[in-house]
Amino acid sequence: MRVDEFGADPADLTPLTGAALLTPAHQHPSGVVLSPARRGEFVAWAECCDGFLIEDDYDGEFRYDGRPVGALQALDPERIVLAGSVSKSLAPGLRLGQLVVPPTLRVPVTAAMRESGGGVSVIEQLTLADLVARGDYDRHVRRVRTVYRRRRAELADRVGALTGLRLVGAAAGLHALLPLPSAEYERRLISTGEYVGLRLHGLHASGYRHPPDTSAPAALVLGYATPAPHAWGQALDLLGEVLEAEGLRAGPRGTRP
Image 1 (cartoon, rainbow, N blue to C red):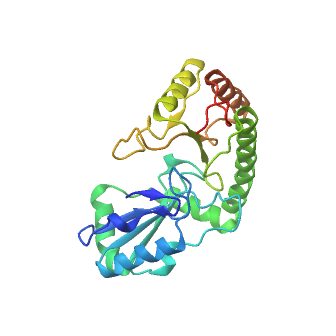
Image 2 (cartoon, rainbow, N blue to C red):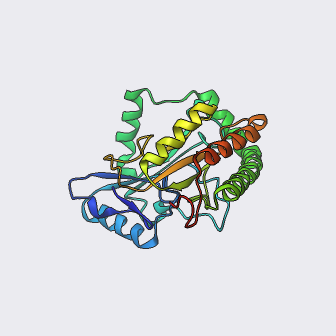
Image 3 (tube, rainbow, N blue to C red):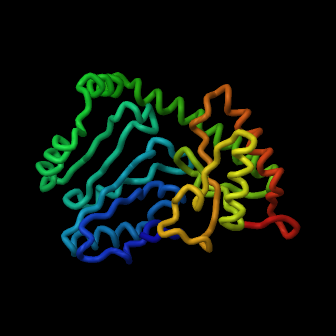
């Protein structure tokens, strides 16, 4: 599906589509929130075409600006599967997640999980349940959210000071976009990053465009959660070196995305 400033566009869905996967609270990787009008259009499609929507709330714990975004699933619990996990808040290696499944799908979903080996150790499940019950999980999320909010601010300040540009899609999640003039410029920055020891990702170079379209807007996808505390400052310094080396600037005299 195409994505614009209002989020995913349901115009490409047909009566034969069957199901659509959405990230309404924080579209990956653009960061846009699915608009109320688009939410209504997706729900109308599901009801009209006997389809289902899968709402992937992959980083809902990490919203820094404004109120939390309400779940799409509340609009039609009979047609929408709400999915979440602790991959962002704890660790992906735990393989812990949750599904809120409509009654009509519970039997086939359970069977598919059993056949695919998608079960999770009871020990990990009970451990997470204990963390939630005691309030430790909530305290952990609030602590790391403070850390990531500070990192987001430091990243935005560094990029702004060096280029005069503003990050996009940074209101929530663990990454932000730095708009660039072209796909070729994006590749140059990634190559320079590799040279200085900094791994960068881009909308074009990392395969986010489906199908590939070199004329589509380009951007670096800057994640700020992965570096360890002792490496965060160095990562910012290396990013600064890359941006300065390639002369990325806003304004009429520089490179303007």
